[in-house]
Image (tube, rainbow, N blue to C red; front, side, top):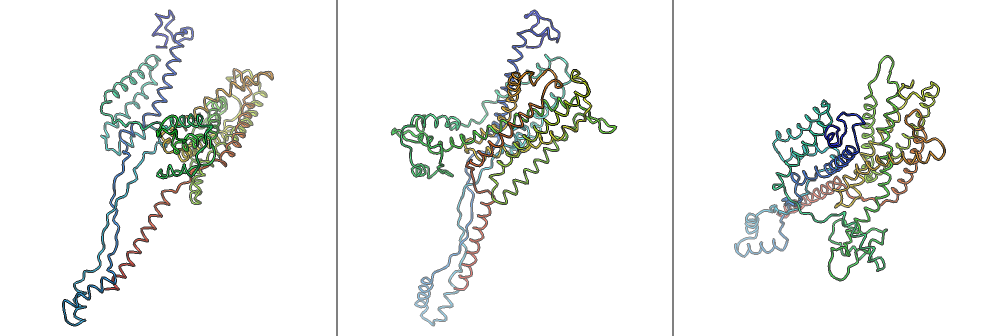
Length: 544
């Protein structure tokens, strides 16, 4: 609706795709549509995979599994004596014959099979691996549920075909029109199947519980706080519950009001209080992640603009512009291997809980180094521009090879790789179990806030630099002082590193026994049981 030909007759404007043909009405419609598209994409990212998990994923139920425990029934000495005397009385003959009859009639010790049941650990869908890959997540679920592969392929093939066709369409009204029609059809198809979807009733939002705890603790701030022993006693049946020190004001949210109502806006359970504490302790870490997002954003803005005006010649060959993207992806993959190696070494030392924090620290350190190198290279670039008189010629190619900015691209790849590899484990391992499905999407959310914050940082830096004379940001890069902006980001990243290091050392990490360790303990227990069975069997043989 915002394209010039659609409302030209109503707004009395021309129908050409020219700036003068775009009025205030078209601009208002365009920005409104842009906001709606952003809201739709956000809801799509958060809801799509979670919806498929509810419909096709494993159900959270406990299934009994038969476990066979073998034990040996061995008669006691008293039973042997009683049976032997009975045989002597019955036979009335010699002791040797009676003993022989007793041994032949007495059944040997046999293993008794005792069947016990234990709950089976339900398999979970790892949403962390599919934050930005919903198609792969859905295909994995479809494969597990053995849905018809032909239908699944059609679901994936259709958008791929549309994406291939749209770039060849010239009219913007037709491009947006096709997208709008596809979205409308998808909505109608989804609504047609609404009667067949499994409805999982909500058990209450853990996000709401955070606000309940904050409200209840504020209203009870003048009351006496319950002791740790009382809180532990109330939650003795809650798995993995332990009362933590610090943020003691929130403990007052668990004070009972005498009405017996244990779930209201005035009374919260100790478990809900501990979950709220965990969320509040993570807020300083979130600030660190936002700053990393600010540095990440300059890689797709200012770095690209610098590279577009540099020479891609390598000897006699002209390298493609995608060369930097290839080097970036290569550095990213190698950095991911580096993080995996660090995580494995820490796991061997039983300190794997610290791997995500170390990864975030390395990402923050890489951000500072990236900005320092970018500032040095930009200073060099401005010097070359001044020497060749290119300040007023923004479209001219700068006689400077693009390999000057390869190191900063590599450090940017290290930053993004460590960020993506460590932030998700940190959030999920240290957040309340009830909030894991929400914090999964906090990772791209924090990064997105950093990218939006980069726009604010440019505005603030421009306003601040205007006081000292010429602003840092002009209409072209040749006239701007990006080097000073990069130095500012380098200082901000250094402060961010110190900030994170301080909070990371203070942060109470959740240290849990790994599945491998549990499996090893169960294996050792099984071996001990088998050894005990063999020992009893030998004793039974000796008796008989």
